[in-house]
Length: 210
Image 1 (cartoon, rainbow, N blue to C red):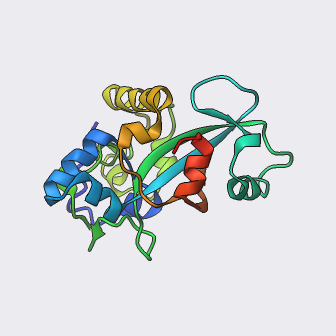
Image 2 (image 1 turned 180 degrees about the vertical axis):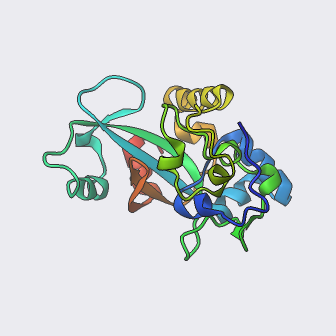
């Protein structure tokens, strides 16, 4: 499933979410803007950590709460009592958001890199890995209002495979080796919701690299 949002005058998904990007997608975006990948990341991107609580160790990218940076642990304690023993921590690179909260590439309801936008943007709102009522989950989405008879769709298998391979590569080779160049600042999110701003130092401390 693919949605062409041009002409819908919506762009709500660009305003509500941190847009993460895969390495090969970023290559295309940098090429479209005719700048190096390093300059693209430096100018347009932030580090992005998405945390999900789990009980007990085991599994890829699972981190003990003991090893969380103090700033992140402090913010998490406001949401949990007691703090879960472990978290799945998914590290990515995301597009910056402007003062209005929207993706940095959104201008007058149009995407400035639309021809090279991330695959998740192409697929939205059909991005769930579980069967959900899309009309209820994304009631703001104009595309769904144009297709009211599509209540449940799973994330495209090819995209799910790409994301899975990405995190497997991060687990095996290290985040820094996957990207080569890292932004100086970032954000931590709890189950996709903004938690706090973080520094590159916080990020490297968490993954014990650098």
